[in-house]
Image (cartoon, rainbow, N blue to C red; front, side):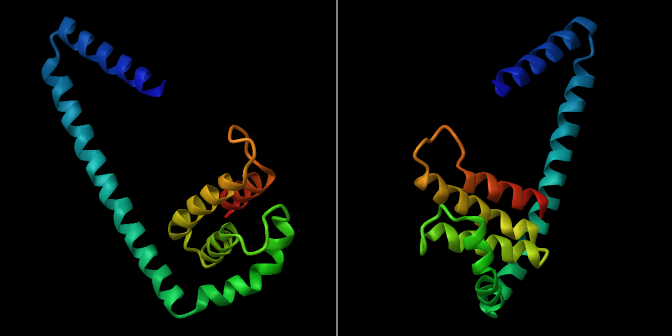
Length: 142
């Protein structure tokens, strides 16, 4: 649906530029927007690479494993519906550890993986489970 809305805006802009004789301004704005998009993407990629690198160092140093063992009782309390030993718990603990260490961007891939694993446990694929809502709330607040 959103794609259709954007297509509508682009089409209206094109028609308005043709009617008003401002195609040059439309073209210039399109290229400027593309240039800004690339600049923002490079900025986000560089931050993501930095945090993922720091996360890898923390993981290789064993810091994440230690944090996960400390977090295990809390995670079992917050996510009682998730069976013990399920892969989702490992991803949740890694996600929480990364957020505690301030590595929010590096925590995102683990949060996505945790949600995917929680979805496998979900009996109703159209509705979020309490565990999924709890993980979302934790990530949002982190």
